[in-house]
Amino acid sequence: MAKLSIIIILMLPTFSLQSPYIPPEIQRCSRAFLTVSSLWRPQSYSNRFEAETEVELNWETNCDESNYIDSVALFREHPGNKGAVSLIHLPTKQYPGYFRTNITLGNTTLPGGWQLEEEEEKDLHKDQNKKSDEDSEFSIEEDEESEAEKEEQLKVRRENRRDDDSPVKGDHCLPFWIAAYRNKTLTYIDCLKIRPTWIWDHRADLGDMSLRSLFIPGTHNSGCYKKLTGLNNQSARRNSFASRFLLTQDLDIYAQLVYGIRYLDIRVGYYPSTPEQFWVNHDVSRLVPLRHVLQSVKQFLKRSPDPLILDFHRFPVGFTERRRGRRKQHKGVSPAHRLLVDLLWNELGEFSPADASMPLNTLWKSGRRLLVSYADKASREEFPWLRGEIGNVADKSKETIWTHRPSVIVIQEWGNVQNSSQLYEFLSRTIERRKKLWGPSMKSGNGDLWAAMAELTPTPMDVVFSRPGSGLRRMAHDVNRNVTRWFRDLWWQSANIVATDFFRGTNIVDVAVEANLRRSHI
Image 1 (cartoon, rainbow, N blue to C red):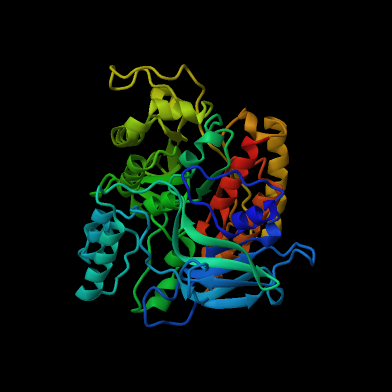
Image 2: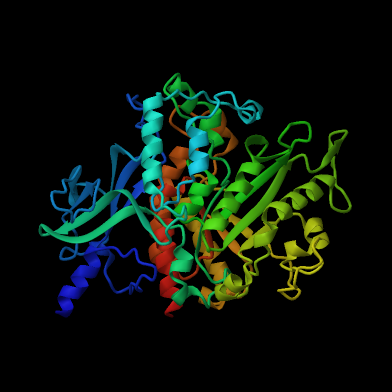
């Protein structure tokens, strides 16, 4: 009977409010998981979504013969359903632990009521000549969908929502499943999923841990997500400089958070002469109005109880003045920083500041679940809430929750490397150095918040002499599977924040959830 119970646990993933702890001794060799490719396939398709977001099958290869799974299969429904038919069934030994299909996820609705209906209707019926698109560094035309297609998508989204309009906590499967087999026997099932409340779902295990002691999945250049869609001149767009070297994510901020990302890396430019003064930048190129990011964060915090870290890491345009070719640094807080800090407090002050050293249970009781890391030292010195304090804020009636804390900023460990082996060497050295600062276990939560920036960086020569098909998407594709394996097998106990490009090409959210559960039992 005990043996039968274990088989059942392996076969069916748990999506309850309080998922059971998965012990590390359960062998990963029986497991498989799905990712979404960062690449665009070069050929054209009749459907505008079918050249991107292709589903990838992944499984473990470092196994002995007796534990190695024989095959994996992809389904559009739970493999246990009566009459379920696989889309693809692969013998695993013919492939290196990975297979990229030509089956696409497409513009799939977020399940469990997590789709924002108002925003979706706005997206489906939007004016093609929006002012914000005109103001951006590059604007992309979109093919018009027929009214019938729009109405069908709206119908699906409405049916997916609850009557009370509140999303359902817990994990929710997107319409793709993977099954693993050994000796023609089904050994494991998993789905491509969203995890909008994963910290809260595991509060019984994680509630006594702090943000400093968690493994937190994040994204690099989180706001650089502008989608390039439509087939008209699509090849030229996708091989443009903008599409190859400015975009680092393929989902907007709200969707990133719903998938399970809990750290956002934002770089802000200030453009006082434009209708939208603050923009999310990739270096000196502006991509998305910052207002969209803040609204997305607020929408998510209103729906999910999970804490977040919002890292304003750089301010590349507009925050310093130039005189005769030199930058003039302000002695105090610059006017641009004052405007930005006021904007952040007005938009998100009700959720901030979180204290990185406090247990999550304390954050939930206080309602302060948003930690804003702000890289400008003068601003942190002038505005107490950027230091993790809540006294002396604009609203004097606010109760002082935290005592005086040192400035809370996220330290980014950046390798500036161009291939997978270089990234491994850099991260390995960084982890060892961080262990000396933190001790052998991250669970203590002592030390600074820090982020392993687990992505590759092109050199200027890479950009100048790049070819079609190269760029950040290709670099993410080359390293993301390795990042999953490194942090899953080697560094799960030592990581704090791990930020990636095109994060759906990794399994970093699932890796973080399991790592945190393992840490909580140490």
